[in-house]
Amino acid sequence: MSEKEHGNTMLKKKSINVLLFFSLLTVLIMPGCDRAMGPGLEATPLPTSHEVEICTERDCGPTLSVRLAGDVPDAYSFAYETTGGARREVRCQDGVGEYPTNHFDSMSHLLCRTYGIQFVNLSPEEMTVTVRWEDGEFSQTLKPVYRVSHPNGPSCPPTCRSGSITLTIPTPADGS
Image (cartoon, rainbow, N blue to C red; front, side, top):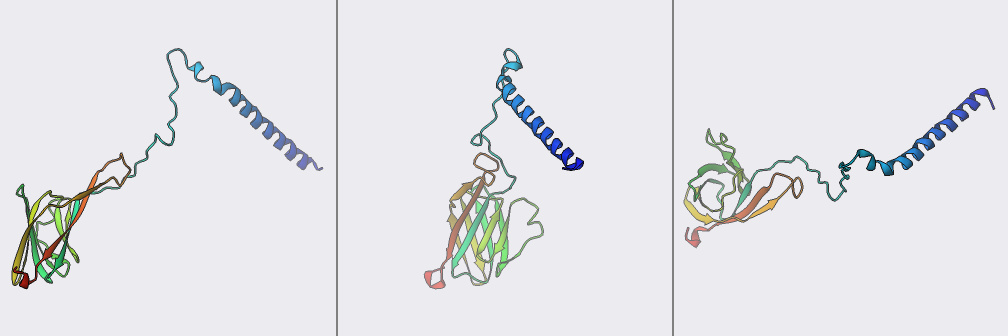
């Protein structure tokens, strides 16, 4: 065996011996660590995986989708009024919105979608909606049901409310 190989072998043996020494020292000393803290002091136990909840940071706001069904016109205006007096209106053409200048000044607003209307940051308990088009108009009071979710974990904020409700526009033969 060369002198270099002999030196490498000896270094490996010393490394193993040092590792074994500290491992043995840890095993012998650790059981008494809680007593070494002094009178009246207790070690805080580490939480188990069942006690630790890691929260992500997804955000959400309340939403409501109003799906239009029945004899839906290509172009219409959609207005709502809540029992509290909040009111908003938007004009839609094939799922594309024509929004008033100040429509997005507020955190809550309406968006035209191909399926109908989406309320963003708004989840009214009761509202009267009116759909107007060239040849007619239809109004109905809606009471949406919301689903509550916690996207970041069961006990992590925020609590999100989302709902979906269908508004069926009658055909002219139904007596609009």
